[in-house]
Structures are given as structure tokens and as C-alpha cells.
Length: 142
Image 1 (spheres, rainbow, N blue to C red):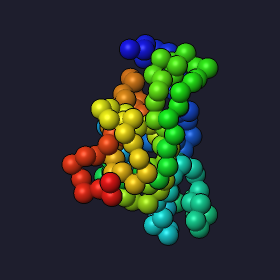
Image 2: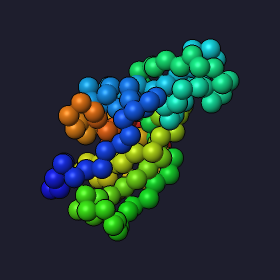
Image 3: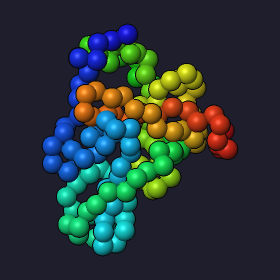
């Protein structure tokens, strides 16, 4: 297993700070416009749909579907090299937004487009990194 000390950490300032801190508490929050009610990803100070600066947060159920994915088989980063092969995916959350994440856990190598996934968390101090595992208990398209 790789050392968590060497794991590259996400940017934790500005609009995304609340996202990473809430994930550290094992809660998946998504930005939501308070004007047009659009839920979106990635965190930013203005709604990408209507331009409003009235952006709040809404709790995600943490489930979605794999939109697309790739299996990474080489990396120049020492931390990620130790994880090879690993799965990077675009997941369509049930709330609408599409996010980039990793598919982890037993069977991650079996990932396919259309499979249902559920959130898990890598917690590193105050912050968390949402990752997903295959949701074999759900009624999936696979």
C-alpha cells in the first residue's frame, strides 16, 4: 500500500473548499444555484446556467452511473504508479452533474459504461476525496 502522505491533494481554496471539507465528514455536497435551482459541478462562485452569484450547497445521495471510464496502466507520479492499474471515470450523479472520480474497491477492474456506482471516501485529515465503488446491489443497466 502507498503512503497517504505522498498523495496529491486537491485545491482547497475558494469555491471548492466546502466540497472537500464536507467530503472529509463523509458527506457529498454539490453546488446548487439558489436562483434557477440548477445543481452543477465543479464548485464555482457563479451558476454556469444563469450566472447568479447566489450559490449554495445541496446533499447528494452519492449514487450514479458510469458515463465513461479508462483504466490507467502507467503514471509518472509515484503515488499513482503504486496503484496501477486504476480506474478513472466520469460519473453521472443521480442529481444531474457529471464528475470525474476513481472507481475503487473489489471489482473496480470490471467497471463498464452504464454500471451503477455509490460514493465512498478517502479521508485525509480535514478533507475527503469522493471515490466510487460498483453498486452491485442496485438495479443497474448491466
